[in-house]
Length: 304
Image (cartoon, rainbow, N blue to C red; front, side, top):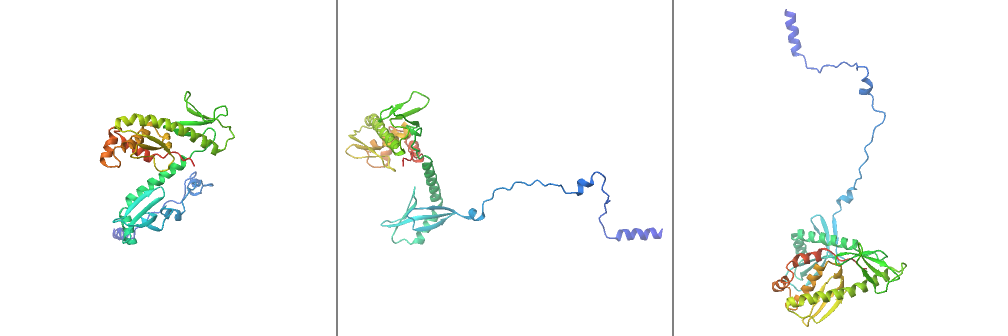
């Protein structure tokens, strides 16, 4: 009895040891449990971006840049001009950021002002960059069968030596086609010039019709129409009643053309962009703001 009690006490005081498992592996499982597989299926490696590329910040560079500033995660190289003015002015265009500042403002103060407006600047720079990319995609490839927008719808150019050099518009089939009297071996420059000549004649005819429609509604009288090839301006008006319209407007839907026509005719009543001017435009084009935004957001095809 005494020996059993002592043994029990010794058992309770002994250190805890993990129990040993039987080292014998059941037959049939030994190979599966202990042997490594003969072949290992390797997971295909994912493409990785080099670390330096991931760390390079976005860059926006003006062609005439003479200063750089870090705005958020982007390096912005901008064109700084000194001018006689009271405040710092920012302009974001296709080339990038331009800054005009008074001569007495320090460069540090200019950079500080840019950082304060960094959200707006970066948003506008991104929008300008996207617009430029859309412009590049919209560049016309001058060849037989090329497609360009005409009054908002696709127009296919067909080289047809049997047609007159002036060109003929065919609208009866599934798509509108412009048949130009040129051989299939014509050079891109010849095709471009022939299509432009046809579009300019078509633009003059279309514009005159819309000017005659909106002038009585606005109670104005236009005297002369001139076509423009400007890259950044869609139209202008002079007090003597002469109107200038960009023939490339013919790429846009008729509603957009109508907005520009009404806009320029409204200037014959109000020669500025005051609230009274926009109220005048609204009388004939109530949704002018949406049409104006469409014109700003959707670039016309590049011809060069």
